[in-house]
Length: 468
Length: 100
Image 1 (cartoon, one colour):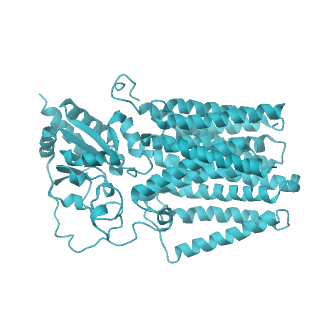
Image 2: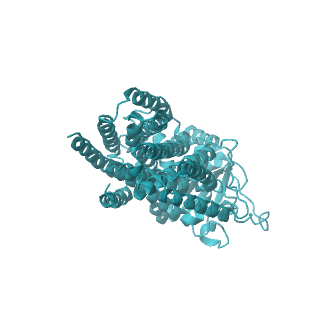
């Protein structure tokens, strides 16, 4: 009887999770998706807690209370910190899977060794490797995103890096196979922690060669791993809800990672093992000959006032400068004059998929004015002013023209085709990837040097002053 | 335990996942990620079974930490997803909605 009720509950929860994701297809229904997800999780917790084998209720209440105590503040972080929060929660997800897998193994070993079939061992090993790897990998990613001091920001590479990683992976796989074949051997309980340690180490090694610009892809891949570790747990404890939910999460991470890779014209293996940013130094020759044309805020404001179609291209620099609210004020000023204003969003702008959209939505910019790269590019020649706010590589024409550039082939927002371009830039240094940007030297481009928030604030003041 | 039905569920669920996720609006990729975070914290089911069972203490401690970690993801994942989604407004709804 109880079995029927709990299985029915899990089935309902699985269906609700699918609806939750389905409702994310448009912002109009998306919040319904959250409620469906909450309902599904509540049902799953309820029927599991009601299992007759669950007897230590105080422990559960305490752990859940602690989860609330940490979870609520974590949900209130500023939206610019969402990438690191996401990475951190992947780490939590990985830790949960790894710990449950570890507990399951030692529990079965002491209570019912016959349960440790080859199939269950494969599932358990997959669960702990994926779980612990996701734990340290995501912690490293979160550290890089938060710019924690002892986590190197730049990609770290050393000779034979991939060979060493591959060797370590081979050793881990060999140990895992041995434990799977002989889960009850005297040495197995001692080998198990070595596999855990290897997985933890592997997570760190996978992330250190990856630079900040590749974070959107890496976060998506870690998302996928966290989902797959839940799937493995589902196989290990024979729970189909875990398998369904984990598979949904795994495919979500996979699709996002594919979108990110396409948006950078790179392959998975290249992102994971390519160590971007170390590829080649910036060509020194000819660089001195190029001169930036800078423009004053007054001049830029005048040009903006004359425009009828303005496209704003935001990048990670906008998030760093916290300029999104000033951008909204600029948007309002231009709109008041009847100017069409659109935001061109590159899929990898920012540090995670969709990062720019959330920041602009927070600033109260209607999502109907946020336009994807592929949709805005055909209109770019009709654009009077393209305003680049803290974006760099995603508008670099070298991606189209310079075969020797590391970003060659990457789809870009074609700001260079606009009638005029204003680019706000903090300093004259090249961007994160260390690549020179031809766009800044074009005869249609004028630079506005300074902090994005200040520059746009000044622009708004100019425009507001001239409104009488 | 029967291996095949379980594998069936996994393969079919992956196909559903790929189909459903492909249709998710690109505007919402960040909230999608925090939502799937919360959903994959369904590992909470395994954690409850390990924590609440009548098992040796060290096993239950591992379970309790896992339960805490999953619960953190569930709570923060759903809350922050909803917080972000509330901000997505159309032109008409702008202004009348609360500016949070």
